Length: 218
Image 1 (cartoon, rainbow, N blue to C red):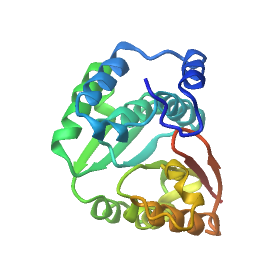
Image 2: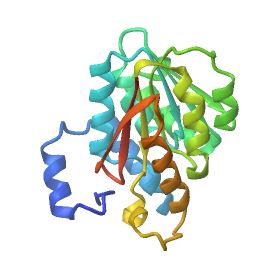
Image 3: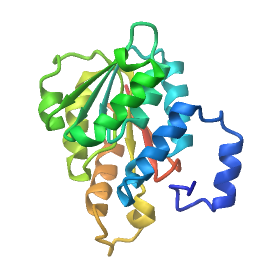
Image 4: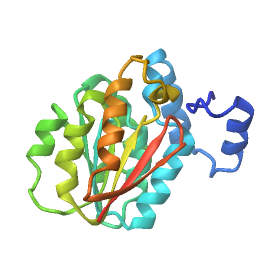
C-alpha cells in the first residue's frame, strides 16, 4: 500500500501502519474494491487517516456529523464507527456509482443505519440543513474550488467546540510553490490562507496523508 503523504517513504509508511490498529476485513475489502477503479482510487483516505477519524470521532463523543465528499465510503465507515450511541452521519456526494460501493461496505460493517447519503450538489444539501449550531463534526474532502463555500456553510452550524476537518490541504507540497498551478493548488492555497484567519475558528494543519486541517469552533 503506497503512502498518500509525499513526506513518507514506503518503508516509513509501512512502519506507521504496523503501529496503528490493524484493518479489519471490511476495510481491507473496501480498499481492494476501490483500488480496482484505477487511478481515481487515490481519492480514498489513507488507512492511518481513517483510524484517526474513528478515534477523533469517538473522543469527541460525536452525535451529529456531516461529510462532504464520500467517494467509495471509507472515511464515512470510519466516522460512523466512532459515533456515540444514537449518532448519525450525513454524507454528501454526487456519484451513485462510487457511493454504491460504500453502501455495501457500510452494510457489511453494520453501520448503514447510522449513515444518511444524499446524492445532490453538496452546497445545496448544506444550505438545507438547520440554521443553528448543532453539528459536532464535519469532514470536507471534495472538489477543491468548493472548499470555502462548504466551510462557510458548515462553520455557523458547528456547535462551540465542534470540529471541522479538511483533507488534501498540502496538495503534494505544491502549496509552497507560488508559481505552481498544478491541479487545484491555487484553490487549496487560497482556502488555507482564508481558514487560518477565520476568527470563529482555531486550527492546526497536520502532515497526515496529503495534509489534514483540524479546526475547532471557538
